[in-house]
Amino acid sequence: MTFDRSVKIAPSILSADFANFGAECEAIEAQGADWVHVDVMDGHFVPNITFGPATCAAIRPHIKGVMDVHLMIAPVDPYIEAFATAGADIITAHVEAGPHIHRTVQAIRGAGAKAGVALNPGTPAESVEYLLDMVDLICVMTVNPGFGGQKFIQSQVEKVRKLRAMIGDRPVHIEIDGGVTADTAPRVVAAGADVLVAGSAVFKGGSVSNPAPYGDNIRAIRQAAAALAAE
Ligand code: DX5
Ligand code: ZN
Picture: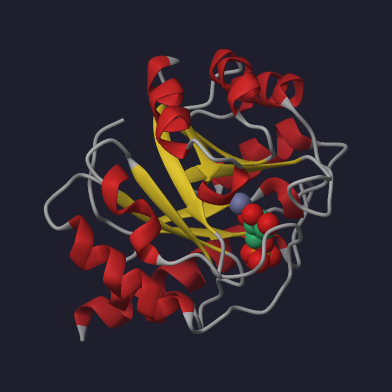
């Protein structure tokens, strides 16, 4: 993976057909997705359960590009190796998931993956201040994690702006997760985000047998963000 700050769209397969992940990953990549975002939930850190490392390993061969794994689990450290072995390019853990996020980031990099840290809406930007030299990505949750299809929390835009200033020249992505649409994307890109996770806004109206709407939806988000950059 090379680093750049161009806007990347990362569809979340939380909104895909769970009986057809392989084909869904292939469809969204064919329709213009830059990364594939994989939401792992444990029913403990967040009030929903999805799947674990075995599913990640099973979908890996169906993804040509970046597999971006978002761990909403606690504890997280005992499972890092398994997700790295499953082929995650990026593993993101939550700052709130345990008392030792610094150690968690070390473990992710030690396992050979890029390291991300995610912040819930109630967690301040300053919570990652001493991690900036050792992470590859900061994920700003713009909804409370656990479910797709929730409303974008506007107060997080200011947090993105703060993080962008804190990051400076460091090669650290700012990823936005939750409620991203063609309407909300320009606000976070203007504030400094470069990776846009979108579940419902990408998968709406389409399917594996009718994937064209995925492409339309991805383009709509990308164009909304680009129109702003051109202003
Ligand atoms: C929420 C997940 C998100 C979610 C986004 O806990 O981390 O990745 O799928 O879904 P939308 O785009 O529908 O808000
Ligand atoms: Zn996510």
